Image (cartoon, rainbow, N blue to C red; front, side):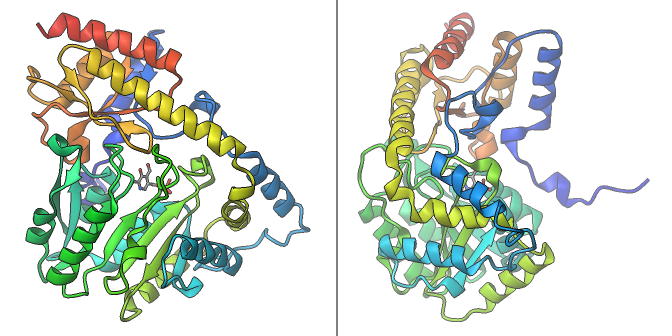
Length: 411
Ligand SMILES: Cc1ncc(COP(=O)(O)O)c(C=O)c1O
C-alpha cells in the first residue's frame, strides 16, 4: 500500500481538526443545530456575520477583470510591481524605512508564503522561536520541515504579555526566526512600543543581528483603542524583519487569498532570492486579485465607512464575548484588545484534556470551539479559543448553552 509521508503525522491544524469536523457533520446529519465559534473568517457561511469585502474593492476587481484580458495571464512569481509598490508606499507610511518593492513577495494568502518561507529556511537541526499560544500554522510548518518549534510564554496573568527573557533564552546559533503575532491570534493581545523594543533588543543581542523577526501583522487594522499600529520594522534599522499582512483580516476578504511579506534590514539577499525561486514553482499568485489588493491598500483611507462600521461591531462583539464568559461560573477570560478572538480558560479543569472538554460541549450543546492545545498550550490547562465575529444574538444563544453546560458539569 502506498504510505502517507511521515510529515503528515507531525503537523496538525486544530482549527479544522478532522475529529471535530466529523462530529459536527454527524450532529448536523441528525438535524442538530451547531454554533461554530471556531474559524476566524469574517466572511464565513456566506457572510452570516454581516462582514463583506468593502464595496470599492469589489468594484475595483470588476474593472480589472473587464480590461480586455490584461490580467488574465499569470502574474510575476514575485508579485506584480503595481501591487508591491502599493505595499511599499503603505509600509513607508507606517514608518518602515527599508521598504523596497524589490524586497516584497506576494502570495495566495500568508499561509502559502509561510509555507515557502519555512521551506527555504528550516531543516533538521534548526529551530524557530514561537509564541505560546501560537497560531497553529507556525508549529505545523516548522514540524513539517523537521525543525524544532521552541516557545516563549505569552503570560495570561499579565494580559498575555510576552516573557521577553524566554525569547532570549530560546535563541541559539540554529535559530532561523523569532515569530511575533501582533495583534495576536488567539488571544487578541496587542504589543506596545516598549515591549516591541525589548524584543528587538534581545533578538539583536542574542541573534547577533542575524536572526530575523517574522512579524505577523495581519490583524493590525483591527485594534480597538483607536491608536496607530506600531509596526516592528519601524522600530529598527538593524534587526532583519519580515513584515506580513494580507487581504484576509483587515480587508475582510479571506477568500480572495492574497498576502505579502516585506523583507527589511537583511544584510544579504539569499533568503529572499530563495523565496522568489520557490514562488516560481507555483507560477504566480492570483493576478486580478492582487491588483485589487493594490487598490484596497491605496484607496482605504478614502473609503472608511464600511471599515469604521465593522471595527465598531468587532469591538462591541468582543466586549460581549468577554462579559458573557466572565459571567459564567468556572470560566474566565482576558479582554481582547484587537483582532477577533479570545482565549478563555476553564478554571479547575475536571476534564483530562481540553479536547475532551470541547468534544463533550459539542456533543451536548452543539457549540464548537477550539482547544488551547491546538495553539500549543498544555492540554490540561483548560484554555480554548472562541471567535468574537458572530452577532450578539448568535453569541447569546451559544453562551446560554455554554452556561447551561458549565452549570451541569462544574459545581
Ligand atoms: C496570525 C495569522 N497569520 C496568518 C493567517 C493566515 O492568513 P491568510 O488568510 O493570508 O493565509 C491567519 C489566519 O487566520 C492568522 O490568524
